[in-house]
Image (cartoon, rainbow, N blue to C red; front, top):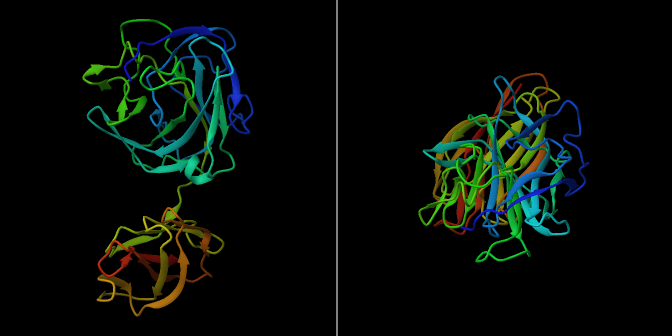
Length: 361
């Protein structure tokens, strides 16, 4: 990772890495997010720093904080600067886009919140970026909402997957770049804004990151990542049904979130952290009376349990059904639901999710 910064002065183009248009935001009502000091649409030569030491499978991330009173945001666009030290076009790389809702800090070490979007995993595809440009990706087809984390922040991260323009041992002259255009002290990286995922270390604040005890900033990293985003108001946060607990064995999570289950307000069902391709057995009851199941070594919450359905998890151990739970029919009713899963890691071969109380309005 330790390689001196090349500083180049060059003009930019805005490149659509997928179907995005080459403009700041697609809608005038969108919020535009950036930490860098470059013009929104660079039209004349400006100085930047190519971070040659960022290797394949490492990542660049930018932290954005919501304003006072600003509610959850839906991502409509994400962008990243990718360039070559010569300022030339025609250099490409394959990257992934990861989005996290929230970040906490353990001293100078960032602890990222839940990952709410992973382009490679969620879409089974990758992104090609080109030099010398601010490459954009249109996110409007996907329901990516951030701002629900208590930190009221989100992270846009770009992970380098395949960079054919060099080697980790000698550096990559084509790589992500920052807005820095000068050499030497001081370190111009704003703390808690630019992150690096370093092999063997994990996520670090670029302003304080070290490799083998040597600080990266200002000679090996300086400035702020040219990472940008556009968002629109996502409206009120989703209503999630009450988690009674009773999870285990295993760590399978059951959530039902979305509408408040009043008439016409359905909610989505999601199961996570199951075994890949597990069978998911859904049980429900009008009453909660937990009892121990010797067949599974878990506690069943709904009692008397009624078998509702069996559905398969995907290869990631997840199941998502949009609008799976309809709104109520005009009178209040509570119903308890739990999932029992096949799980080869457990003694009896089964795991238990948490129990939810579903409150129909």
